[in-house]
Length: 120
Image (cartoon, one colour):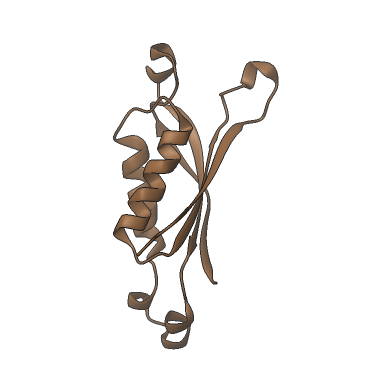
């Protein structure tokens, strides 16, 4: 199966367990792997037969920045659902990284990775 990859897209969102943490926007990084047959688009060289990366980026940005989240797990789930519900993608892997989650413990970032498959 083919896949389209969006790597290290950066967004600013209100995320965190405490109210204080959510009071100020934080940087998050999102990776998305979109499993989608690209044979037709590669043979026609026509964007209408593939997934528009810019549209996916805009969808992720809208999901990340328009709402407050306590958990990166919830954000990852909402991104996966948004992509699967709006595009003809069979499977997604979403990785959300939060660099400040454990910064005081000398950890580069905390992350969650989920895999979701479209049924039906």
